[in-house]
Image (cartoon, rainbow over all chains, first blue to last red; front, side, top):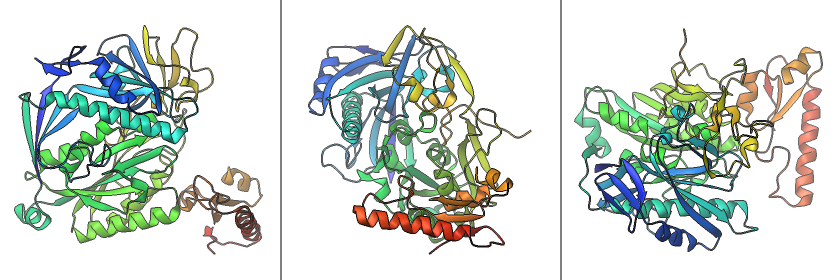
Amino acid sequence: MRLELGKIKITDVQFGESTKVENGTLFVNKQELIDMALQDERLKSVAIELARPGESIRITPVKDVIEPRVKVEGSGVMFPGMIGNKVKTVGSGRTHALVGATVITCGKIVGFQEGVIDMSGPIAKYCPFSETYNVCVVVTPQEGLGTHAYEAAAREAGLKIATAVGEAGRNVEPDEVVVYDTKPLLEQVNEYPGLPKIGYIHMLQSQGLLHDTYYYGVDAKQIVPTFMYPTEIMDGAITSGNCVAPCDKVTTFHHLNNPVIEDLYKRHGKDLNFIGVILTNENVFLADKERSSDMVGKFVEYLGLDGVLITEEGYGNPDTDLMMNCKKATDAGANVVLITDEFPGRDGKSQSLADAKTEADALVSCGNGNIILNFPPMDKVIGMLDYIESQIGGYEGSLKPDGSIEGELQLVIASTIANGYNKLTARTY
Amino acid sequence: MVKEVERAGIPVVHVCTVTPISLTVGANRIVPAVGIPYPLGDPNLDVEGDKKLRRQLVEKALKALQTEVEEQTVFED
């Protein structure tokens, strides 16, 4: 598969009479987007608000973040299987991305784990979306709507609006075009015979109870591990339906912009041969964990991989999936490096990961989610502060009368995201 | 908690779903539970079936408690 990704750099966002991109400014027609979202009868009301870098704005509870993209050439549409009935294979042809812009879904909390984005102040440096031009979709569900139905409605509203906004980039000349190319397996192996064959084991959050991820519209807890071209992910083959701890939530934005895939492509043909992505899940039954990790190990052996990188989403019991994958990929003959974040408790004295294996001897840390920070008050809140103390990283007394917050870093969206799309790490001295 | 109670001289059975974590943490008697969202029962069963399953789990745990172990042991069926 060969994908041309046209990057259209967005440097401002404004409301306008039509949704379009002009000289780097994204204009959005507010009412059009609201009307589109409100076609879903599960939603009572929808508001669209804008948040730009440097503004005194706090966005919370944040459900998902999506980069607006559009398929310009090639089969399929963005987010196949998620919107309408279109599930054609994606990942080839040409796609345009509005880089620097996002669509953020927020509003009344869905689960209990959605997080915070500050557009300025000391917390902004922990979040990549403090630096983007954000179209915030504030959703309110109908009274009495069940939690799972609300999650689905909020998720679909975000994807629909991101698709409509992405459409504005269809006829815009990109500032940069990046080509990603992965050949069919045997051809790919033969293309660089002298280079180590490297794969990426991508673990999708699939614990259920609002911790879900979708692959071409299939709930990831129902998949057995599979193999994919890395470019498929750039066209939205994987979408988030997940309300897990905000700091390492892999939002749909992070699937579209997976830094592991990005970096493996940068070195593809230079010092490694990037073979592809093994996709697996993180289920809540031990038998599922055994079965999925066995199949991951089988893929590593079958594909003849010399090395793999593994990322996980979430922490706690997924650490067991991480360790099982690590052990079985090692047993299958690959060198393994894990990428994850750490939760050693507020005093730093607890075990950083819930599980461990002796094979896990190479690990990149994306930081410690338990450190306590002070969030100063912001002039404006998009969404609401009502849930701060029950959001993960918040606690009784976290929210102060002036709107400031004392809470753990894990309250901040993507602050320790376990694939490296962040600025934190931990080192051993 | 398992380790601290045992340190005080009282044997402990850890009933849990993800037994590898229990092994890593250092429990000595481990009984596998049903699943993370419902470790000690199964809402997919009818009331009778669920009660039977719960009783089986408790009895298995009590039996494990009375079993001498030389090393970390997971009490499979």
